[in-house]
Length: 375
Image 1 (cartoon, rainbow, N blue to C red):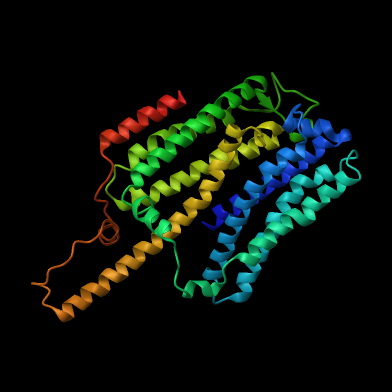
Image 2 (spheres, helix red, strand yellow):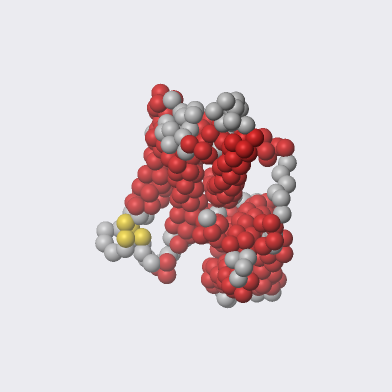
């Protein structure tokens, strides 16, 4: 979970910084051609688009980083020096990723005056500010010893739609169908056109100078087929895993596959487009395309939280069930005492089995609908 959180936090922070960078470049006459790689020929100022695009990704970066710092603090609560060292390394690496990508724009000869000042502000104010805010608001290691206070809405959500919830299968089908439709309808046509126009890809330094067609470079088709394969897996895995009665496969494995697919839709696509100079695809500005990047990114954060919460809930229920069983054995004769029927989540914690697994015909129905959306 720590690696997932760091990757999402660093990527979301980088995306927010790049939106501001290209917005500034688009609004500067000498570098407008660079900003047009993202904004095209829109009439509105680039920074106006950035004002709407950057904050959501910055918020995701803060939440993911705060969760990571809290995880490190509770894991190494008895080793404060090691804890601080890991937290500092996380912060530095996250800042360095932004410096490596945004830094070259700041060294462009056409970037002068207020534009240069804004780029330096991104490197030394915006990204460090996100890191500092997450660090300042992250729970301390002592938070693990305090009782967890959760709202009624959160408790109801966990009961019915959480990883151990009663309607978890229904929620997975709805969210994964939305994901498949969103990614298939926004990414596949774009990637198909990209592969057709650029069948071979060269190094980043050749962008805009050398085009590879018959020889040299590396094929671009694997980018398309990676996203396509992820969509096919996304359409099939609920039908394969949710029908299982073993809680490991129908709950925890589902969450892991879900997070892995979200990384493909967000990180793999983003960095593939970014490193090949397709900045308009890496940093979309129109609502549906932006949602196709934002949704899987933020979903990884909530999947990590769900895995943690579900594991803690199952552990607590096993402990509580064991204590009640011991108490009843002392107070009453266990052979005649009438035991109350366990809840769905408690039964899952004790037996490792799911009582209401998805029927096979519903899994097949989902796969058929999802594959139809991909086709």
